[in-house]
Length: 306
Ligand SMILES: [Zn+2]
Image (cartoon, rainbow, N blue to C red; front, side):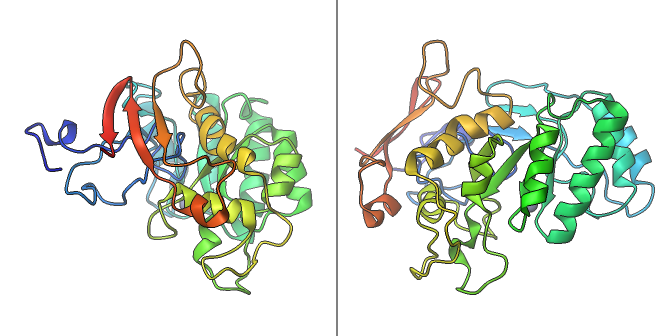
Protein backbone atom coordinates (compact mmCIF):
# COMPACT_ATOMS: atom_id res chain seq x y z
CA UNK A 1 0.00 0.00 0.00
CA UNK A 2 1.64 3.20 -1.04
CA UNK A 3 0.86 6.87 -0.89
CA UNK A 4 -2.40 7.91 -2.47
CA UNK A 5 -1.58 11.52 -3.19
CA UNK A 6 -1.03 14.76 -1.35
CA UNK A 7 -1.23 16.01 1.22
CA UNK A 8 1.03 13.26 2.45
CA UNK A 9 -0.10 13.34 6.06
CA UNK A 10 -3.64 12.53 5.10
CA UNK A 11 -2.89 9.96 2.45
CA UNK A 12 -1.78 6.41 2.14
CA UNK A 13 -1.98 3.66 4.64
CA UNK A 14 -2.75 5.29 7.90
CA UNK A 15 -2.47 3.94 11.36
CA UNK A 16 -4.44 5.92 13.85
CA UNK A 17 -3.11 6.36 17.31
CA UNK A 18 -5.95 7.94 19.14
CA UNK A 19 -5.54 10.96 21.28
CA UNK A 20 -2.56 11.97 22.97
CA UNK A 21 0.36 13.91 23.86
CA UNK A 22 3.80 13.97 22.47
CA UNK A 23 4.64 12.12 25.63
CA UNK A 24 4.37 8.55 26.68
CA UNK A 25 0.70 7.74 26.74
CA UNK A 26 -1.66 6.61 24.02
CA UNK A 27 -5.35 6.30 24.47
CA UNK A 28 -6.42 3.51 22.17
CA UNK A 29 -4.57 0.24 21.91
CA UNK A 30 -4.64 -2.18 19.08
CA UNK A 31 -2.65 -0.42 16.45
CA UNK A 32 0.69 -1.83 15.57
CA UNK A 33 1.78 1.73 15.87
CA UNK A 34 4.92 2.30 13.95
CA UNK A 35 7.81 4.20 15.36
CA UNK A 36 8.52 6.16 12.24
CA UNK A 37 6.48 8.62 10.20
CA UNK A 38 6.21 6.00 7.49
CA UNK A 39 4.59 2.68 8.25
CA UNK A 40 6.10 -0.66 7.38
CA UNK A 41 4.12 -0.75 4.18
CA UNK A 42 5.54 2.56 3.13
CA UNK A 43 2.45 4.59 3.95
CA UNK A 44 2.19 7.46 6.31
CA UNK A 45 1.10 7.23 9.90
CA UNK A 46 -1.50 9.64 11.11
CA UNK A 47 -1.46 10.29 14.80
CA UNK A 48 -3.37 12.47 17.11
CA UNK A 49 -1.21 14.59 19.29
CA UNK A 50 -1.67 16.74 22.29
CA UNK A 51 1.44 18.81 22.29
CA UNK A 52 3.13 19.70 25.54
CA UNK A 53 5.93 22.20 25.13
CA UNK A 54 8.45 22.41 27.88
CA UNK A 55 8.84 25.91 29.14
CA UNK A 56 12.53 26.34 29.72
CA UNK A 57 15.93 25.20 28.55
CA UNK A 58 18.07 27.09 30.97
CA UNK A 59 19.53 26.02 34.26
CA UNK A 60 19.04 29.52 35.61
CA UNK A 61 16.14 31.88 35.35
CA UNK A 62 13.78 28.97 34.89
CA UNK A 63 10.88 30.76 36.50
CA UNK A 64 11.26 33.75 34.19
CA UNK A 65 11.49 31.61 31.06
CA UNK A 66 8.51 29.56 32.12
CA UNK A 67 6.45 32.60 32.95
CA UNK A 68 7.22 34.17 29.58
CA UNK A 69 6.39 31.06 27.64
CA UNK A 70 3.20 30.35 29.53
CA UNK A 71 2.09 33.96 29.28
CA UNK A 72 2.66 34.06 25.52
CA UNK A 73 1.34 30.68 24.52
CA UNK A 74 -2.06 29.15 24.00
CA UNK A 75 -3.36 26.51 26.34
CA UNK A 76 -5.80 23.76 25.34
CA UNK A 77 -6.15 25.31 21.90
CA UNK A 78 -6.52 23.03 18.90
CA UNK A 79 -8.86 20.37 17.64
CA UNK A 80 -9.44 16.62 17.89
CA UNK A 81 -6.24 15.87 15.95
CA UNK A 82 -3.77 18.35 17.42
CA UNK A 83 -3.83 20.73 20.31
CA UNK A 84 -1.74 22.25 23.01
CA UNK A 85 -2.01 20.50 26.33
CA UNK A 86 -0.28 22.28 29.13
CA UNK A 87 3.39 21.84 29.92
CA UNK A 88 5.38 18.66 29.46
CA UNK A 89 7.01 16.31 29.49
CA UNK A 90 9.34 18.36 31.61
CA UNK A 91 9.07 21.95 32.66
CA UNK A 92 12.77 22.44 32.15
CA UNK A 93 15.68 20.48 30.77
CA UNK A 94 17.16 20.42 34.24
CA UNK A 95 14.61 18.22 35.96
CA UNK A 96 15.67 18.87 39.55
CA UNK A 97 16.45 22.58 39.36
CA UNK A 98 15.04 24.22 42.52
CA UNK A 99 13.78 27.10 40.38
CA UNK A 100 11.34 24.72 38.74
CA UNK A 101 9.13 25.04 41.79
CA UNK A 102 8.44 28.69 41.01
CA UNK A 103 7.60 27.72 37.43
CA UNK A 104 5.16 25.07 38.65
CA UNK A 105 3.53 27.58 40.97
CA UNK A 106 3.13 29.95 38.03
CA UNK A 107 1.67 27.23 35.84
CA UNK A 108 -0.82 26.26 38.53
CA UNK A 109 -1.83 29.84 39.14
CA UNK A 110 -2.58 30.22 35.43
CA UNK A 111 -4.56 27.02 35.14
CA UNK A 112 -2.06 25.08 33.06
CA UNK A 113 -1.88 21.34 33.19
CA UNK A 114 1.62 19.97 33.81
CA UNK A 115 3.16 16.58 33.38
CA UNK A 116 6.74 16.00 34.44
CA UNK A 117 9.30 13.36 33.52
CA UNK A 118 10.15 11.75 36.86
CA UNK A 119 12.27 8.66 36.44
CA UNK A 120 14.97 8.46 39.09
CA UNK A 121 14.47 8.24 42.84
CA UNK A 122 15.89 11.74 43.21
CA UNK A 123 13.50 13.10 40.59
CA UNK A 124 10.45 11.44 42.13
CA UNK A 125 11.32 12.78 45.57
CA UNK A 126 11.95 16.32 44.35
CA UNK A 127 8.95 16.48 42.06
CA UNK A 128 6.50 15.30 44.69
CA UNK A 129 7.77 17.82 47.23
CA UNK A 130 7.75 20.60 44.62
CA UNK A 131 4.24 19.66 43.48
CA UNK A 132 3.15 19.81 47.13
CA UNK A 133 4.64 23.29 47.42
CA UNK A 134 2.98 24.45 44.20
CA UNK A 135 -0.34 23.00 45.28
CA UNK A 136 -0.13 24.73 48.64
CA UNK A 137 0.79 28.07 47.15
CA UNK A 138 -1.60 28.09 44.20
CA UNK A 139 -4.40 25.88 45.27
CA UNK A 140 -5.11 23.26 46.13
CA UNK A 141 -5.62 22.93 42.41
CA UNK A 142 -3.14 20.63 40.67
CA UNK A 143 -5.31 17.54 41.15
CA UNK A 144 -8.22 19.33 39.53
CA UNK A 145 -5.92 20.40 36.68
CA UNK A 146 -4.97 16.74 36.23
CA UNK A 147 -1.25 17.24 36.71
CA UNK A 148 0.80 14.10 36.48
CA UNK A 149 4.24 12.58 36.82
CA UNK A 150 5.71 10.31 34.16
CA UNK A 151 7.41 6.95 34.72
CA UNK A 152 7.94 6.91 38.55
CA UNK A 153 9.48 3.45 38.33
CA UNK A 154 11.15 3.60 41.79
CA UNK A 155 8.25 5.28 43.64
CA UNK A 156 8.00 4.26 47.31
CA UNK A 157 4.91 3.43 49.35
CA UNK A 158 5.09 6.78 51.16
CA UNK A 159 5.37 8.59 47.83
CA UNK A 160 2.40 6.68 46.46
CA UNK A 161 0.39 8.01 49.39
CA UNK A 162 1.65 11.53 48.72
CA UNK A 163 0.58 11.27 45.07
CA UNK A 164 -2.81 10.00 46.22
CA UNK A 165 -3.16 12.92 48.61
CA UNK A 166 -2.34 15.43 45.86
CA UNK A 167 -4.99 13.90 43.62
CA UNK A 168 -2.67 13.92 40.62
CA UNK A 169 -2.25 11.20 38.00
CA UNK A 170 0.63 9.10 36.72
CA UNK A 171 1.77 8.28 33.20
CA UNK A 172 3.32 4.85 33.52
CA UNK A 173 4.92 2.50 31.03
CA UNK A 174 6.24 -0.99 30.61
CA UNK A 175 9.62 0.04 29.28
CA UNK A 176 11.58 -2.37 31.52
CA UNK A 177 10.32 -4.99 29.07
CA UNK A 178 13.66 -4.47 27.36
CA UNK A 179 15.65 -4.39 30.61
CA UNK A 180 17.85 -7.25 31.72
CA UNK A 181 17.00 -9.31 34.77
CA UNK A 182 18.41 -7.64 37.85
CA UNK A 183 18.11 -4.15 36.46
CA UNK A 184 17.30 -1.65 39.18
CA UNK A 185 14.73 -0.31 39.33
CA UNK A 186 12.32 -2.44 37.39
CA UNK A 187 8.92 -1.18 38.32
CA UNK A 188 6.76 0.71 38.13
CA UNK A 189 4.67 -0.88 40.88
CA UNK A 190 1.54 -1.17 38.75
CA UNK A 191 -0.39 -3.21 41.32
CA UNK A 192 0.21 -0.78 44.17
CA UNK A 193 -0.58 2.27 42.05
CA UNK A 194 -3.91 0.94 40.83
CA UNK A 195 -4.83 -0.40 44.26
CA UNK A 196 -4.19 3.09 45.65
CA UNK A 197 -6.84 4.43 43.29
CA UNK A 198 -4.46 6.81 41.52
CA UNK A 199 -5.53 7.83 37.99
CA UNK A 200 -3.01 6.10 35.72
CA UNK A 201 -2.48 6.29 31.99
CA UNK A 202 -0.55 3.63 30.11
CA UNK A 203 1.95 4.13 27.36
CA UNK A 204 5.29 3.21 25.94
CA UNK A 205 7.46 6.31 26.50
CA UNK A 206 9.89 7.37 23.83
CA UNK A 207 10.80 4.84 21.21
CA UNK A 208 14.44 5.13 22.19
CA UNK A 209 13.41 3.80 25.61
CA UNK A 210 11.14 0.90 24.82
CA UNK A 211 9.04 -0.58 22.05
CA UNK A 212 6.19 1.57 20.80
CA UNK A 213 4.03 -1.53 20.39
CA UNK A 214 1.37 -1.31 23.12
CA UNK A 215 0.97 -5.09 23.32
CA UNK A 216 4.56 -5.55 24.43
CA UNK A 217 4.07 -2.88 27.07
CA UNK A 218 0.87 -4.50 28.31
CA UNK A 219 2.53 -7.92 28.24
CA UNK A 220 5.08 -6.59 30.71
CA UNK A 221 2.38 -4.95 32.82
CA UNK A 222 0.41 -8.19 33.04
CA UNK A 223 3.24 -10.73 33.38
CA UNK A 224 6.12 -8.72 34.93
CA UNK A 225 8.34 -10.48 32.37
CA UNK A 226 10.94 -8.89 30.15
CA UNK A 227 11.48 -9.89 26.55
CA UNK A 228 13.71 -12.75 27.66
CA UNK A 229 10.90 -14.21 29.74
CA UNK A 230 12.45 -13.36 33.12
CA UNK A 231 10.18 -12.02 35.85
CA UNK A 232 11.67 -8.64 36.72
CA UNK A 233 8.77 -6.80 38.34
CA UNK A 234 7.86 -9.20 41.12
CA UNK A 235 4.27 -9.21 42.21
CA UNK A 236 3.33 -5.95 40.52
CA UNK A 237 1.25 -7.44 37.75
CA UNK A 238 -2.16 -6.12 36.79
CA UNK A 239 -4.92 -7.81 34.83
CA UNK A 240 -5.33 -7.41 31.11
CA UNK A 241 -8.54 -5.49 31.64
CA UNK A 242 -6.72 -3.13 33.99
CA UNK A 243 -3.92 -2.65 31.46
CA UNK A 244 -6.41 -1.98 28.68
CA UNK A 245 -8.27 0.51 30.85
CA UNK A 246 -5.03 2.33 31.61
CA UNK A 247 -4.17 2.52 27.93
CA UNK A 248 -7.62 3.77 26.95
CA UNK A 249 -9.75 5.58 29.50
CA UNK A 250 -6.85 6.13 31.85
CA UNK A 251 -4.75 7.95 29.28
CA UNK A 252 -7.79 9.81 27.98
CA UNK A 253 -8.43 11.16 31.47
CA UNK A 254 -4.90 12.52 31.79
CA UNK A 255 -5.14 14.36 28.48
CA UNK A 256 -8.63 15.71 29.14
CA UNK A 257 -10.06 13.47 26.42
CA UNK A 258 -12.20 11.15 28.53
CA UNK A 259 -15.37 12.89 27.34
CA UNK A 260 -14.68 11.80 23.77
CA UNK A 261 -12.12 8.98 23.80
CA UNK A 262 -11.12 5.93 25.80
CA UNK A 263 -14.34 3.94 25.68
CA UNK A 264 -16.94 3.01 23.10
CA UNK A 265 -19.97 5.03 24.08
CA UNK A 266 -22.68 7.05 22.40
CA UNK A 267 -21.49 10.60 22.02
CA UNK A 268 -17.78 9.80 21.87
CA UNK A 269 -15.58 9.90 18.78
CA UNK A 270 -15.54 6.76 16.66
CA UNK A 271 -11.82 6.20 17.22
CA UNK A 272 -11.43 2.50 17.65
CA UNK A 273 -9.65 -0.61 16.46
CA UNK A 274 -10.89 -4.07 15.59
CA UNK A 275 -8.24 -6.48 16.78
CA UNK A 276 -6.85 -9.68 15.33
CA UNK A 277 -7.71 -11.56 18.52
CA UNK A 278 -9.38 -11.28 21.90
CA UNK A 279 -6.99 -9.50 24.27
CA UNK A 280 -8.73 -10.98 27.29
CA UNK A 281 -8.44 -14.64 26.29
CA UNK A 282 -5.36 -14.77 24.06
CA UNK A 283 -2.33 -16.65 25.31
CA UNK A 284 0.62 -14.53 26.37
CA UNK A 285 2.34 -15.35 23.10
CA UNK A 286 -0.74 -14.42 21.08
CA UNK A 287 -1.26 -11.29 23.15
CA UNK A 288 2.14 -9.92 22.15
CA UNK A 289 1.25 -10.37 18.48
CA UNK A 290 -2.16 -8.71 18.47
CA UNK A 291 -2.68 -6.25 15.66
CA UNK A 292 -5.38 -3.99 14.37
CA UNK A 293 -7.26 -5.36 11.39
CA UNK A 294 -9.43 -2.28 11.11
CA UNK A 295 -8.84 1.15 12.59
CA UNK A 296 -11.31 4.01 12.56
CA UNK A 297 -10.47 7.58 13.32
CA UNK A 298 -13.44 9.85 13.68
CA UNK A 299 -15.50 7.16 11.96
CA UNK A 300 -13.17 7.10 8.96
CA UNK A 301 -11.27 3.96 8.03
CA UNK A 302 -7.60 4.84 8.34
CA UNK A 303 -6.19 1.32 8.39
CA UNK A 304 -7.42 -1.96 7.04
CA UNK A 305 -5.57 -5.25 7.01
CA UNK A 306 -7.41 -6.44 3.91
ZN1 LIG B 1 10.22 10.93 30.24
